Image (cartoon, rainbow, N blue to C red; front, side, top):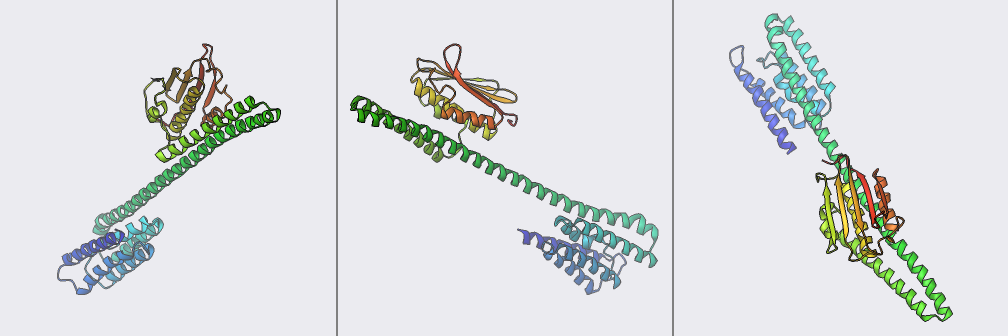
Length: 359
Protein backbone atom coordinates (compact mmCIF):
# COMPACT_ATOMS: atom_id res chain seq x y z
CA UNK A 1 0.00 0.00 0.00
CA UNK A 2 2.83 2.42 0.88
CA UNK A 3 4.71 1.83 -2.40
CA UNK A 4 1.50 2.27 -4.37
CA UNK A 5 0.84 5.59 -2.62
CA UNK A 6 4.38 6.77 -3.38
CA UNK A 7 3.99 5.77 -7.02
CA UNK A 8 0.68 7.59 -7.38
CA UNK A 9 2.12 10.69 -5.68
CA UNK A 10 5.13 10.58 -8.01
CA UNK A 11 2.91 10.28 -11.08
CA UNK A 12 0.73 13.15 -9.88
CA UNK A 13 3.78 15.37 -9.25
CA UNK A 14 5.30 14.62 -12.64
CA UNK A 15 1.96 15.19 -14.38
CA UNK A 16 1.25 18.53 -12.68
CA UNK A 17 4.75 19.87 -13.37
CA UNK A 18 4.56 18.52 -16.92
CA UNK A 19 1.31 20.37 -17.54
CA UNK A 20 2.86 23.60 -16.20
CA UNK A 21 5.81 23.10 -18.56
CA UNK A 22 3.53 22.48 -21.53
CA UNK A 23 1.41 25.56 -20.82
CA UNK A 24 4.54 27.78 -20.75
CA UNK A 25 3.12 31.17 -19.78
CA UNK A 26 6.01 32.85 -21.67
CA UNK A 27 4.74 31.41 -24.90
CA UNK A 28 6.42 29.10 -27.36
CA UNK A 29 7.42 25.46 -26.98
CA UNK A 30 9.27 23.89 -24.08
CA UNK A 31 12.58 22.07 -24.53
CA UNK A 32 12.58 18.32 -23.81
CA UNK A 33 14.88 18.79 -20.81
CA UNK A 34 12.05 20.58 -18.99
CA UNK A 35 9.95 17.41 -19.18
CA UNK A 36 12.91 15.41 -17.90
CA UNK A 37 12.92 17.67 -14.84
CA UNK A 38 9.19 16.95 -14.39
CA UNK A 39 9.90 13.22 -14.45
CA UNK A 40 12.77 13.71 -12.01
CA UNK A 41 10.56 15.58 -9.53
CA UNK A 42 8.07 12.72 -9.72
CA UNK A 43 10.73 10.01 -9.40
CA UNK A 44 12.03 11.56 -6.17
CA UNK A 45 8.71 10.68 -4.51
CA UNK A 46 9.64 7.00 -4.62
CA UNK A 47 12.25 7.64 -1.93
CA UNK A 48 10.23 10.03 0.23
CA UNK A 49 9.59 7.53 3.05
CA UNK A 50 13.16 6.30 3.45
CA UNK A 51 14.97 9.60 2.83
CA UNK A 52 12.45 12.42 3.42
CA UNK A 53 15.03 15.15 4.05
CA UNK A 54 17.23 14.07 1.15
CA UNK A 55 14.22 14.07 -1.21
CA UNK A 56 13.26 17.54 0.00
CA UNK A 57 16.78 18.92 -0.53
CA UNK A 58 17.08 17.23 -3.92
CA UNK A 59 13.72 18.69 -4.99
CA UNK A 60 14.84 22.19 -3.91
CA UNK A 61 18.19 21.84 -5.66
CA UNK A 62 16.49 20.53 -8.79
CA UNK A 63 14.10 23.47 -8.79
CA UNK A 64 16.95 26.00 -8.49
CA UNK A 65 18.80 24.21 -11.31
CA UNK A 66 15.64 24.24 -13.43
CA UNK A 67 15.32 28.01 -13.19
CA UNK A 68 19.08 28.52 -13.62
CA UNK A 69 18.69 26.96 -17.10
CA UNK A 70 16.00 29.50 -17.99
CA UNK A 71 13.30 26.88 -18.54
CA UNK A 72 9.54 27.70 -18.61
CA UNK A 73 8.12 28.90 -15.27
CA UNK A 74 6.50 26.21 -13.12
CA UNK A 75 6.27 28.05 -9.83
CA UNK A 76 7.81 26.89 -6.57
CA UNK A 77 5.01 25.05 -4.83
CA UNK A 78 4.22 22.53 -7.56
CA UNK A 79 7.60 20.71 -7.70
CA UNK A 80 8.37 20.76 -3.98
CA UNK A 81 4.86 20.62 -2.47
CA UNK A 82 4.85 16.83 -2.23
CA UNK A 83 8.39 16.84 -0.83
CA UNK A 84 7.40 19.37 1.85
CA UNK A 85 4.39 17.23 2.78
CA UNK A 86 6.51 14.05 2.94
CA UNK A 87 9.22 15.60 5.11
CA UNK A 88 6.65 16.97 7.56
CA UNK A 89 4.76 13.68 7.67
CA UNK A 90 8.04 11.95 8.53
CA UNK A 91 8.54 14.29 11.50
CA UNK A 92 11.01 16.70 9.85
CA UNK A 93 8.86 19.79 10.32
CA UNK A 94 11.66 22.30 10.73
CA UNK A 95 13.50 20.93 7.71
CA UNK A 96 10.36 21.49 5.67
CA UNK A 97 9.78 25.00 7.02
CA UNK A 98 13.44 25.97 6.60
CA UNK A 99 13.72 24.56 3.08
CA UNK A 100 10.47 26.21 1.98
CA UNK A 101 11.53 29.58 3.41
CA UNK A 102 14.98 29.34 1.78
CA UNK A 103 13.49 28.53 -1.63
CA UNK A 104 11.01 31.37 -1.45
CA UNK A 105 13.71 33.85 -0.37
CA UNK A 106 16.30 32.84 -2.97
CA UNK A 107 13.74 32.68 -5.78
CA UNK A 108 12.18 36.03 -4.94
CA UNK A 109 15.54 37.81 -4.73
CA UNK A 110 16.77 36.26 -7.97
CA UNK A 111 13.64 37.19 -9.87
CA UNK A 112 13.64 40.72 -8.46
CA UNK A 113 17.23 41.22 -9.57
CA UNK A 114 16.25 39.75 -12.92
CA UNK A 115 13.82 42.58 -13.52
CA UNK A 116 10.44 40.92 -12.93
CA UNK A 117 7.50 43.14 -11.99
CA UNK A 118 7.58 43.52 -8.17
CA UNK A 119 3.83 44.12 -8.03
CA UNK A 120 3.04 40.77 -9.68
CA UNK A 121 5.84 38.94 -7.91
CA UNK A 122 5.14 40.09 -4.36
CA UNK A 123 1.48 41.00 -4.66
CA UNK A 124 0.21 37.83 -6.33
CA UNK A 125 2.66 35.01 -6.93
CA UNK A 126 4.53 35.11 -3.61
CA UNK A 127 1.39 34.94 -1.35
CA UNK A 128 -0.03 32.14 -3.51
CA UNK A 129 3.21 30.16 -3.36
CA UNK A 130 3.57 30.61 0.40
CA UNK A 131 -0.06 29.57 0.93
CA UNK A 132 0.34 26.36 -1.10
CA UNK A 133 3.60 25.47 0.63
CA UNK A 134 2.10 26.16 4.05
CA UNK A 135 -0.90 23.99 3.16
CA UNK A 136 1.41 21.11 2.16
CA UNK A 137 3.35 21.41 5.42
CA UNK A 138 0.14 21.68 7.47
CA UNK A 139 -1.36 18.62 5.79
CA UNK A 140 1.78 16.63 6.52
CA UNK A 141 1.70 17.68 10.18
CA UNK A 142 -2.00 16.80 10.50
CA UNK A 143 -1.44 13.34 8.99
CA UNK A 144 1.55 12.74 11.24
CA UNK A 145 -0.30 13.91 14.36
CA UNK A 146 -3.26 11.70 13.52
CA UNK A 147 -0.99 8.71 13.03
CA UNK A 148 0.71 9.34 16.37
CA UNK A 149 -2.68 9.73 18.05
CA UNK A 150 -3.89 6.42 16.64
CA UNK A 151 -0.69 4.73 17.79
CA UNK A 152 -1.15 6.18 21.27
CA UNK A 153 -4.77 5.01 21.41
CA UNK A 154 -3.74 1.54 20.24
CA UNK A 155 -0.93 1.50 22.81
CA UNK A 156 -3.29 2.50 25.61
CA UNK A 157 -5.75 -0.19 24.55
CA UNK A 158 -2.97 -2.78 24.53
CA UNK A 159 -1.75 -1.67 27.97
CA UNK A 160 -5.28 -1.74 29.36
CA UNK A 161 -5.83 -5.22 27.93
CA UNK A 162 -2.57 -6.38 29.51
CA UNK A 163 -3.59 -4.82 32.81
CA UNK A 164 -6.93 -6.61 32.67
CA UNK A 165 -5.22 -9.92 31.91
CA UNK A 166 -2.81 -9.38 34.81
CA UNK A 167 -5.68 -8.46 37.12
CA UNK A 168 -7.57 -11.61 36.17
CA UNK A 169 -4.46 -13.73 36.68
CA UNK A 170 -4.09 -12.32 40.18
CA UNK A 171 -7.79 -12.91 40.82
CA UNK A 172 -7.48 -16.51 39.66
CA UNK A 173 -4.40 -17.05 41.82
CA UNK A 174 -6.27 -15.60 44.80
CA UNK A 175 -9.27 -17.85 44.15
CA UNK A 176 -7.14 -20.96 43.89
CA UNK A 177 -5.20 -19.99 46.98
CA UNK A 178 -8.40 -19.38 48.95
CA UNK A 179 -9.88 -22.72 47.95
CA UNK A 180 -6.76 -24.80 48.46
CA UNK A 181 -5.56 -23.07 51.64
CA UNK A 182 -8.92 -23.43 53.34
CA UNK A 183 -9.37 -27.01 52.18
CA UNK A 184 -5.90 -28.09 53.22
CA UNK A 185 -6.36 -26.58 56.67
CA UNK A 186 -9.63 -28.52 57.07
CA UNK A 187 -8.06 -31.72 55.74
CA UNK A 188 -5.07 -31.37 58.06
CA UNK A 189 -7.24 -30.69 61.08
CA UNK A 190 -9.54 -33.67 60.55
CA UNK A 191 -6.66 -35.94 59.54
CA UNK A 192 -5.07 -35.19 62.93
CA UNK A 193 -8.40 -35.90 64.60
CA UNK A 194 -8.67 -39.20 62.72
CA UNK A 195 -5.13 -40.19 63.70
CA UNK A 196 -5.79 -39.48 67.37
CA UNK A 197 -9.11 -41.35 67.23
CA UNK A 198 -7.43 -44.39 65.71
CA UNK A 199 -4.79 -44.35 68.43
CA UNK A 200 -7.56 -44.14 71.05
CA UNK A 201 -9.56 -46.90 69.35
CA UNK A 202 -12.52 -44.58 68.73
CA UNK A 203 -13.58 -45.86 65.31
CA UNK A 204 -16.72 -43.71 65.18
CA UNK A 205 -14.76 -40.50 65.66
CA UNK A 206 -12.23 -41.66 63.08
CA UNK A 207 -15.02 -42.35 60.55
CA UNK A 208 -16.50 -38.92 61.18
CA UNK A 209 -13.13 -37.21 60.70
CA UNK A 210 -12.45 -39.13 57.48
CA UNK A 211 -15.92 -38.17 56.26
CA UNK A 212 -15.08 -34.51 56.88
CA UNK A 213 -11.86 -34.92 54.95
CA UNK A 214 -13.75 -36.47 52.04
CA UNK A 215 -16.34 -33.67 52.05
CA UNK A 216 -13.70 -30.95 52.14
CA UNK A 217 -11.65 -32.49 49.34
CA UNK A 218 -14.77 -33.11 47.27
CA UNK A 219 -15.87 -29.49 47.69
CA UNK A 220 -12.44 -28.25 46.67
CA UNK A 221 -12.48 -30.49 43.61
CA UNK A 222 -15.88 -29.08 42.59
CA UNK A 223 -14.72 -25.50 43.00
CA UNK A 224 -11.55 -26.18 41.02
CA UNK A 225 -13.58 -27.76 38.24
CA UNK A 226 -15.84 -24.71 38.27
CA UNK A 227 -12.85 -22.39 37.99
CA UNK A 228 -11.34 -24.37 35.11
CA UNK A 229 -14.74 -24.48 33.43
CA UNK A 230 -15.08 -20.72 33.70
CA UNK A 231 -11.66 -20.29 32.12
CA UNK A 232 -12.54 -22.62 29.27
CA UNK A 233 -15.79 -20.76 28.74
CA UNK A 234 -13.72 -17.78 27.61
CA UNK A 235 -14.81 -14.30 28.74
CA UNK A 236 -14.20 -12.93 32.22
CA UNK A 237 -17.24 -13.05 34.52
CA UNK A 238 -19.87 -10.37 33.95
CA UNK A 239 -23.15 -9.39 35.58
CA UNK A 240 -24.76 -10.09 32.22
CA UNK A 241 -24.20 -13.80 33.03
CA UNK A 242 -26.08 -13.87 36.34
CA UNK A 243 -28.29 -16.70 35.11
CA UNK A 244 -25.20 -18.95 35.06
CA UNK A 245 -24.67 -18.25 38.77
CA UNK A 246 -28.27 -18.71 39.87
CA UNK A 247 -28.61 -22.07 38.11
CA UNK A 248 -31.83 -23.22 39.79
CA UNK A 249 -31.10 -21.59 43.15
CA UNK A 250 -34.11 -19.66 44.59
CA UNK A 251 -32.73 -16.15 44.00
CA UNK A 252 -34.84 -13.02 43.76
CA UNK A 253 -33.01 -10.37 41.70
CA UNK A 254 -33.83 -6.66 42.02
CA UNK A 255 -32.22 -3.83 40.08
CA UNK A 256 -32.29 -0.29 41.44
CA UNK A 257 -31.47 2.65 39.19
CA UNK A 258 -30.79 2.57 35.47
CA UNK A 259 -28.83 -0.51 34.47
CA UNK A 260 -25.79 0.41 32.36
CA UNK A 261 -22.50 -1.05 31.15
CA UNK A 262 -19.71 -1.04 33.72
CA UNK A 263 -15.92 -0.87 33.33
CA UNK A 264 -14.70 -4.41 32.73
CA UNK A 265 -12.70 -4.69 35.94
CA UNK A 266 -15.70 -3.47 38.00
CA UNK A 267 -18.06 -5.81 36.16
CA UNK A 268 -15.78 -8.81 36.71
CA UNK A 269 -15.28 -7.99 40.40
CA UNK A 270 -19.02 -7.57 40.95
CA UNK A 271 -19.60 -10.95 39.31
CA UNK A 272 -17.05 -12.60 41.60
CA UNK A 273 -18.62 -11.07 44.71
CA UNK A 274 -22.10 -12.27 43.75
CA UNK A 275 -20.65 -15.69 42.88
CA UNK A 276 -18.99 -16.05 46.29
CA UNK A 277 -22.07 -14.80 48.16
CA UNK A 278 -24.38 -17.24 46.36
CA UNK A 279 -21.92 -20.08 46.93
CA UNK A 280 -21.92 -19.34 50.66
CA UNK A 281 -25.72 -19.20 50.70
CA UNK A 282 -25.94 -22.52 48.87
CA UNK A 283 -23.43 -24.11 51.25
CA UNK A 284 -24.81 -22.82 54.56
CA UNK A 285 -28.52 -22.46 53.82
CA UNK A 286 -29.32 -24.78 50.91
CA UNK A 287 -32.73 -24.30 49.36
CA UNK A 288 -33.48 -21.12 51.32
CA UNK A 289 -34.49 -17.92 49.47
CA UNK A 290 -31.78 -15.44 48.51
CA UNK A 291 -32.35 -11.77 47.66
CA UNK A 292 -29.84 -10.12 45.32
CA UNK A 293 -30.03 -6.36 44.85
CA UNK A 294 -27.92 -4.42 42.36
CA UNK A 295 -28.01 -0.66 42.83
CA UNK A 296 -26.75 1.43 39.90
CA UNK A 297 -25.85 4.78 41.47
CA UNK A 298 -24.28 7.75 39.65
CA UNK A 299 -20.73 7.00 40.79
CA UNK A 300 -20.87 3.48 42.18
CA UNK A 301 -22.43 0.05 42.05
CA UNK A 302 -24.02 -1.29 45.23
CA UNK A 303 -24.38 -5.05 45.73
CA UNK A 304 -26.43 -6.67 48.47
CA UNK A 305 -26.96 -10.42 48.85
CA UNK A 306 -29.17 -11.51 51.75
CA UNK A 307 -30.22 -15.04 52.67
CA UNK A 308 -32.00 -16.47 55.70
CA UNK A 309 -32.39 -19.87 57.29
CA UNK A 310 -31.15 -21.59 60.39
CA UNK A 311 -27.59 -21.83 59.11
CA UNK A 312 -27.36 -18.41 57.56
CA UNK A 313 -25.77 -16.79 60.57
CA UNK A 314 -22.87 -19.21 60.52
CA UNK A 315 -21.78 -18.28 57.00
CA UNK A 316 -18.27 -17.04 56.85
CA UNK A 317 -18.89 -14.51 59.53
CA UNK A 318 -17.07 -11.99 57.41
CA UNK A 319 -13.82 -13.82 57.93
CA UNK A 320 -13.93 -16.70 55.47
CA UNK A 321 -11.22 -17.14 52.85
CA UNK A 322 -13.56 -16.48 49.91
CA UNK A 323 -15.13 -13.35 51.37
CA UNK A 324 -11.73 -12.05 52.44
CA UNK A 325 -10.61 -12.40 48.84
CA UNK A 326 -13.69 -10.50 47.66
CA UNK A 327 -13.04 -7.80 50.23
CA UNK A 328 -9.46 -7.44 48.96
CA UNK A 329 -10.73 -7.08 45.40
CA UNK A 330 -13.23 -4.41 46.41
CA UNK A 331 -10.60 -2.45 48.36
CA UNK A 332 -8.18 -2.60 45.42
CA UNK A 333 -10.80 -0.83 43.31
CA UNK A 334 -11.43 1.77 45.99
CA UNK A 335 -14.64 0.13 47.24
CA UNK A 336 -15.62 -1.79 50.34
CA UNK A 337 -17.31 -5.04 51.34
CA UNK A 338 -18.89 -6.26 54.55
CA UNK A 339 -20.42 -9.60 55.47
CA UNK A 340 -22.29 -10.73 58.56
CA UNK A 341 -25.69 -11.23 60.22
CA UNK A 342 -28.20 -8.38 60.01
CA UNK A 343 -30.70 -7.26 62.67
CA UNK A 344 -33.51 -9.24 61.03
CA UNK A 345 -31.53 -12.50 61.30
CA UNK A 346 -30.47 -12.68 57.66
CA UNK A 347 -26.87 -13.06 56.58
CA UNK A 348 -25.89 -10.14 54.32
CA UNK A 349 -23.00 -9.58 51.98
CA UNK A 350 -22.90 -5.88 50.97
CA UNK A 351 -20.39 -4.19 48.69
CA UNK A 352 -19.94 -0.88 46.93
CA UNK A 353 -17.65 -0.52 43.94
CA UNK A 354 -16.69 2.76 42.25
CA UNK A 355 -18.12 3.00 38.74
CA UNK A 356 -17.32 6.55 37.62
CA UNK A 357 -15.99 5.16 34.33
CA UNK A 358 -19.36 3.61 33.45
CA UNK A 359 -21.01 4.92 30.31
